[in-house]
Length: 230
Image 1 (tube, rainbow, N blue to C red):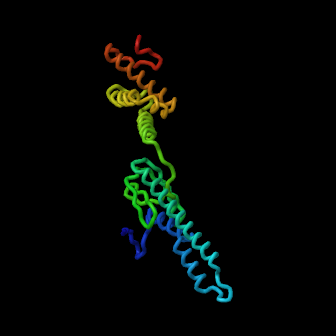
Image 2 (image 1 turned 90 degrees about the vertical axis):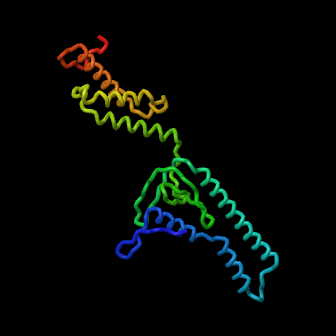
């Protein structure tokens, strides 16, 4: 598999994804894999003391250890692959640490899994990430509720002061925010702070007062304490 990297002043500038993969490969290089174990075993048999050669029992024991290590590595690899595959389609948070020490947190959906050199990699937002970079897995319903609540609160925060709203300028916006809130499920509404729910209701009531005043042909601006049902 090939990679594309940015080159600045004749030097390759690694992205957070590449740094993550590099760190993962370096970490794996510090462990004793089955190839290294086999090389050590062969070297031991080749350079053993001819006066005190390794007994058949010791050789069989070492071969058994090698087989056990290989079996455990294969099991671990299969479990990692199954775990990675189960994440396809899920919303996840990926946390990576670059070579310079800075931490990056991104959110996205796992599009698919790449299995390379016995190691599975999650593909999120067109980037490859090790399972070690997986920070959290989020429920889709949770993400949807959080996004709706965030959008609603941002809309409320952008409204002018309560006494400064007008039907012509702010009526459509307030109606839209109120409709969005009313269409939220009970679970989604729990993501909205109580103070924001109260503020939205105050804007809705204020707007109703202004509209009532316009319909009655009144020229006076209603006060906050007036009841739109009067």
